[in-house]
Image 1 (cartoon, rainbow, N blue to C red):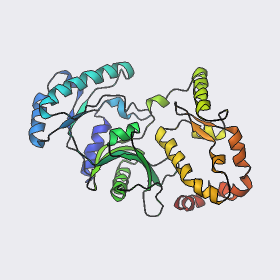
Image 2: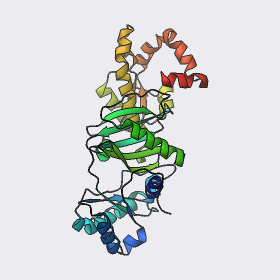
Image 3: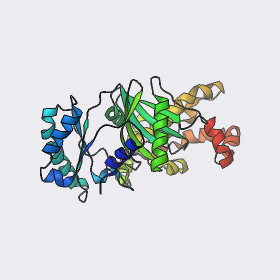
Image 4: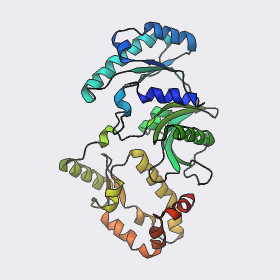
Amino acid sequence: MTPRKYTFLVEAKSLGLQVPETLFLDFETLRNNEYKTLLNNFIDQNKALQYIVRSCVSAEDGSGESMAGHFFSSPPVAPEQLTGMVSESFVKNTEIQTNIAPTAKVNLMVQPFISAEIGGVIFSPWKYFTYHFVGEVTAGGAEAAVTGKDSQFFGLSKTGDFTDFLPQENLPSAELKKMVQTLENHFKCPLDIEWCAKKGVVTLLQARPMTRSLQALNTATTAETKTELAFLNKVAVGEWQMGAYAESLGELSPLSFSVLQKCYEESVETFQTLGFKAETFNFLARSRNGQVYENPTTQADFFKLKAWFSPFTQTASEPRFKQKIEKF
């Protein structure tokens, strides 16, 4: 079965979205070394100065788990280097596949390299506010955003009925909203999206079902938990523990937790205006394995203000107030 990493791009193009021209090379073609003519024809048609070879392994977009980010995709290469890079990419991804996904099929995608001004990743909908999506943007492109290198967070509403949060300058917000709405209306599932933009024109690089990362699949052992707690106590004062909030949040991606932290930072001024010490409310921390922990002492200080916050906390979960809270 053709991986959704490729079929989603084909369908996105049929929806009128800007996507790179893509040559799909299946496992049998690669294994039998029958791709050179296909590559030469692709080069003649596109006449790009550089190309990239991207992994397209069936295990990268599984329904319950994902191994995206664990396979090899090439840097930009000149046309005369493309045949060698396809061969190298197939060998490297076969080695990876043998170790972590023995039943997967190794396919590849070849695309013209797009020189863009900015790029990034998007996760939609965001699990905490379903009418919004969150992402990272950087001048280094999608790869830099995935690794968190010099990136900035943003959160945008899908419609004009809700307020954007963490907006960023020079972000093609309207085009991103249009792209997300188009994809979600068609695929009808939470999405993990890579994109880039130049002069306001957004190009979709990848869209796949949003799934958990490989690192978040295994429950931490007692020894691993002790190691993580020791790490947390080095960077913050307090004895962290699992509690109701930590259990409900579970394992968070670095992006989701960073957005939560950024929202907290943006609220500091409001807390100070109200006469509260902002650090009182910072009682959650994320360990390196993705698990969220609570600082019980700081949390207790927070709940001393329960009477002041109770009108909000009592109504926030009620459906009739949900849209009003998100819009606020």
